[in-house]
Image (cartoon, rainbow, N blue to C red; front, side, top):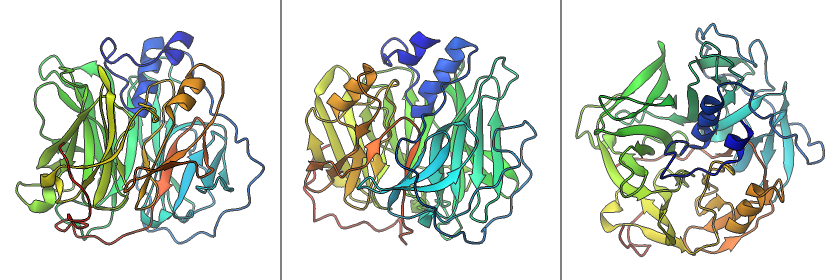
Length: 414
């Protein structure tokens, strides 16, 4: 088990483990036993109490009967502070400012959280928790919805060594006026012999409970993770490509707002290509219109770049935010997410910092903030440590048929 925990993801040989939580799931499958490592304790001084709660917006629905670690508990309630990071240490949910200042949100029993997401304005939170399966019948991951009033709802729980990843609150792309719904990805490392696809599926929670989202794909492709600005109706997702040529991952963007094809809450009909990459850190949305993709091919790492795309400006290509060697490419042994941090910044880890962590020389590293307009990299003060991270974004009204303006940036291809 230990060697699998420490091994760096090898794209050519191992293939899977590209998503942040998927990397952990593959380790569990390979080990067949042993519980996951416990989350690190918060190392900062005891923070102050969180903000006051607001009434819940949704009544919890019936949940899976398989027990989970947060069953029958309540949390302090939302909303959590906006324009700040949200982090869970394994013992506490913590709000972290870009300057590094920390505030306690909620102390909870010791768990192994692996993914977080917040609704627009931070009223509700989704949390994925990794469990300790010893057999295929045991639960391996659980998804919880922390409602603003303090109720904790178990939305999904999986067995057969499956994983749950990238929870996200999105609006219906074919009807943006609807309230945001909770989406997520679930699956395992098996490859379907008929379709050649990794065994994953997109899920949505609607009035009837969890249901699968239909996504039409080609042979050998499977949805691995979803990314979007909280509450927006445009979003992107990464595909795991079994062919591995020229990259293992492909980024698509959903454009069902164009009404070119039939779409609904549970069907994504029109998805267009945006980029190919071997970086597993994801796509960062800084606003409902702007998103950043790390573009790199594993045999041509000198060509690494961060590229800014803008909704309805993609016909012109993308804006090169950064090109160079200072940013970590991402790997399974130092899993970190690319995060939007305000309308003009994304958070990354430095390449040397991530190498030091992978080699056991340190346990934490400074978050680095990349200005999406100038490419300037700074250290605002917040520090990364192992555990799930999310950016709590304000609610920004948007019309997916418009853009943020295409004349203000220099566009190149891709």
